[in-house]
Image (cartoon, rainbow, N blue to C red):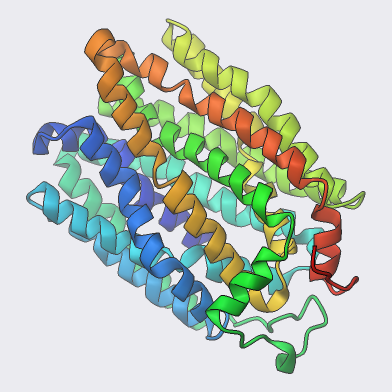
Length: 414
């Protein structure tokens, strides 16, 4: 069920990336404005509501919170299809972001209480695979609906199914016992203040390089995801239907990668939590060159082949990094730590990725025209390389921090 919720979250969050070109043509706005619409809106919302919602998820029934949030962002997505100008569309996207900010902390907190550390990689992969399938299937459906009913009809159609799933989630899923996999008792659940929780996070040495690495990785991912459809349509001159079909296949490769990565990282983690981060470094070393090649080769077939290799190899990065930061978080703070990570991603990474790519492309297009995206997309592999270095730094302390979070060692001030 959490995987299904993640699937709809991915569909509703990323549908505007697939519909970027028809929306831009209809509303007559710049690449920078579309980058803001697909990325910065989430950053603004997360900067406002993510951390309070994370604290709420640590203190309330996560099942009810997630069901309410799902219903809210589904309605907001449908409202995007009713917008008649850029301002209305922007406000509807703000509502989508506000509601979706509850999904990561509630989901990761529940998984942390459903599975022990040694099995969280595989468990998280189910949710991430659901999100990947959602993006892949949603890309195809949105493209087909756009060609037949326009981008407004597509937004309306993909938003409404979430209302049914919200009811199923509310009445069929049980709320797990907090700390049930870590030996925590209900009386041990922290009621610390916001400042106290931030201080506790600050004492986790792995947190700093890990979050910086996740930020760089997500800036690369969201920048690429936000502009890859436009790249295929502008550079390779594909229709919305053909683009969405190919793009859906490419992104679908990440689903298989996540299934493998979750199980493989759990096995590697038996040697120590640092092996999850070693895995991330090795994956980026293979995937980044393929991503760079995908934008520079001239043929469509060669470009798609490079992109398929990239997604098949790198698709598990999100799963493995999630398993890492969930395991270094104390049981009573998993939702807050997840919200803090996603806050950093939204404000400094994923939220600014599409905007940065769009602004850079506005500049590059002055000299390279429609071909500018070939060079703008090289920002992706460069950011991934920086993330790889930061993961190596984080691997030096992650074993100790994981043991501390599990109660196997006493935390000391560094």
